[in-house]
Amino acid sequence: MTGLSRPQERQVNGVWLKQSVGFVTRHFVSAIYFINLSVNLYITLFVIYYLTSPLFIYFTPSSRSFQPSLAIS
Image 1 (cartoon, rainbow, N blue to C red):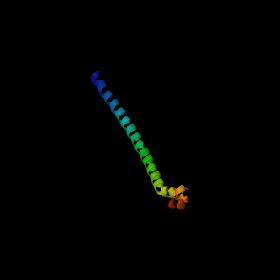
Image 2 (tube, rainbow, N blue to C red; image 1 turned 30 degrees about the vertical axis):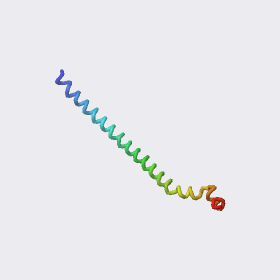
Image 3 (cartoon, rainbow, N blue to C red; image 1 turned 45 degrees about the vertical axis):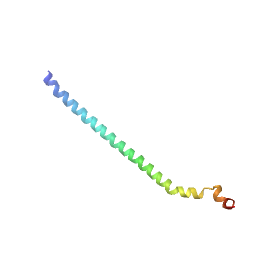
Image 4 (cartoon, rainbow, N blue to C red; image 1 turned 60 degrees about the horizontal axis):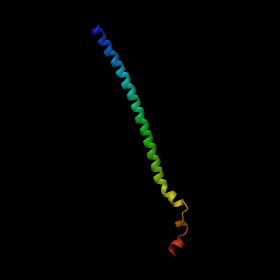
């Protein structure tokens, strides 16, 4: 009985291992893809902010830019 049950058990374990490895690799790949997307989105937002922040600084009305004569005198 033990000699007959062990190969079946090993085969079931092998099938379970293959399924679990496939499941893990699929989810790992999708997680890497999701992380890559989020990192790319963050980098693009940061680059857009970095490129447009001088425009925001120049075009925001501040007291220093509107009253240069008071600052000089």
